[in-house]
Length: 568
Image (cartoon, rainbow, N blue to C red; front, side):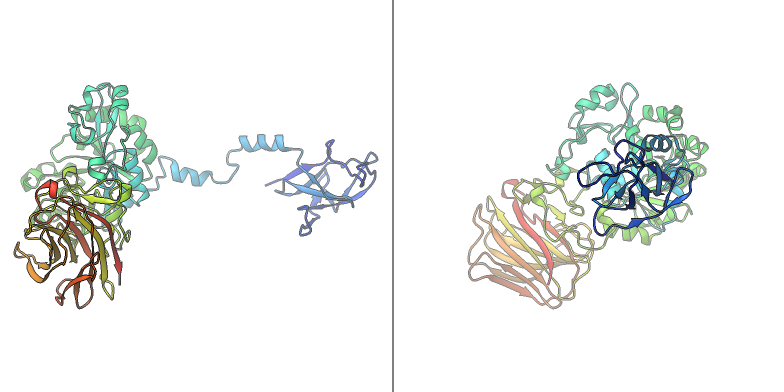
């Protein structure tokens, strides 16, 4: 830093109490106007010689002097009141600042952070973790897939790698999208390569409301260039051309001409027999080749030389995954939506988890204690029977209630509100439920709970993990069941008939207490409160699900509100 020049201007004068100039007056210099200010003596004249204070000239003017190093505001005191002095060399100082090579001393840091040669995240760094995560479609069951909103959401949620699928418009603009047929995401049939970019940009709006809730409005089509400009070097990008025309553009010069330093933070993703892997390796990129569950070892051998990492679908058997892991190259499984799947795959030696649930999958704690359904936005960890099919997803009406449109043993994991680790005294699940059309006496809906794993739950089906479920029947019966991993039918643990059966359109209120020694179900909207209990202690997990139970008629679908889980 440097000393600023003060004094010598028409405004720099010594004055008495009347405002008249005082010639040949002695003054002092301070760092502020108040009583707590400090007197400054580190001053110099124009020749650089030290001076202890100021002396006005014969006309009462304050001559030029240099203040302390780096100080840009002073106060002069000539015995009346302190007056502010401002530098007279501001113009020269600004000019020097603007033309200096590194005026703030942070040039090296900025180059390291933002230049192509100093990425904050590289493929090499990503692979340093024994288990690493890649946000599948930008965490597509938590945010609108392959949109800028999704990629930003994933990175804000801690993602160090994102997956980006790419297609090309009719005029060659690369845009981010997965399905070649646009019906599922955009609500229109056909392919984006029949649209000019200007038309696609203004008419194709990804609409995630069916899958993620109406709180997510229509999104903008996202050009690949915007994603690379925003995230390249900050996260690793698994880049996959989904169509031949997109692949031709990327490999034909577009990627390396526009982003010549991209290789250290881009992984080239293709189907295992795609012929572009050699091109990618020649450009310095790592390659990820994904297979089908039926792909043979011999087929993989044919292409192994051009594969750095193998990809296996989550539907593959444990034996198949172990076989691919045994080849010795890092294996990435997609899509890994649930913590239980992550643990299973990690146990098989899988290194990479390509997950559509980046916010949910890594922590093992409760995310929120009660539902956010009034927002009409799906919470992270609230996972239905199928990851990317909105038909199965939980729906919200904007008033705070939720329901299913698809009523074939419908269910949804309440991963956001579940308490994964059983509290010392147990926990309480509270919720309201109603039927707008009451189902037949024996039909029921309710919740499942007590599960140590967050795998799928479905009524009347052999489930991967055991737990409990309750049945709220159309005739008023309330029952507690356990279910295990060997039979589809539950085991009745407790039952009773409430004094008031469900009434169409009327809310019922429930509490489920899971303590170390009991499972207690109460209907709290009745006076007196109706209660049944079991002393079964088999299951003490913390994961819970909404369950449509045996109701199949959509007009009789149950609705829930005020869902919460709290430790006792």
